[in-house]
Length: 325
Ligand code: P6P
Image (cartoon, rainbow, N blue to C red; front, side, top):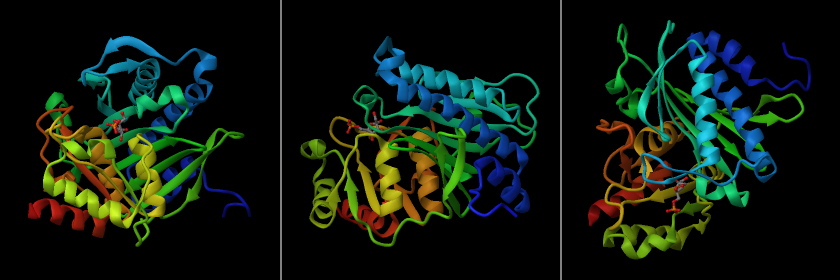
């Protein structure tokens, strides 16, 4: 029994609570690899200009976007910690065109899809950013190859994200359980601070880039107008930060397709699927505007999708307005 005042650490949570529920200890190792990597990333995020880690590498990534130096550094850190966990068979990453197939003896073979640093445009201006991870288990007996990563979100076994904000918070979701852990700067450990997260019944906020309104189709403009009439607008411009606030306070995030982004802007495999998993385990929903995000059968590692994410009733209402045309 923990001492009075002791907060359960993430390590204790994934090695004790999960064992009671038969969770595979390999998954615990994967989660701790993500936690360890995020501790190293947040140190660089917080040092920022002091550590000369801001600015761009001069490269253009597979998304056609300028690579921030912290994007690359974060990608390298998580590839290293995940590869060394002994339980990850393959990694898909926003910053890396092809899947990373982890060589050597991998016990059970988790597949991790990640956005190592989401919200790059906010790095240089000290606004919250984050890291996002979707976790699948390879098919029994499968020798993983590039196609092994193209799994629908409804086959995820867990998802987690880290928000580097006024505090560093890691949110972990498994089937029907979402818990939040805050990094204790003193101990360097994540401590349980948000047990059993459920999205509040009342939606308080809507998060969308209103600057895109003019390029939305009419049904989507109507749906956004309904949100604008009902809820307060909060938009950080970092998906993880916007989603985290909406998860804890009640809200909806919408990045629909538009004339300039026919397939939407956000990525299915390592943004929409993981956060859709978290949202659903917390009682929320995630849709493209026409179908459940996690039912999409992916065709490409970096494919994009429209995303409407948050309170289930508000997502469903928004979808029905869009579908009504
Ligand atoms: P816009 C950040 O670059 C990101 O991928 C998400 O984190 C964020 O929600 C979105 O793009 C912001 O896009 O077009 O509003 O700047």
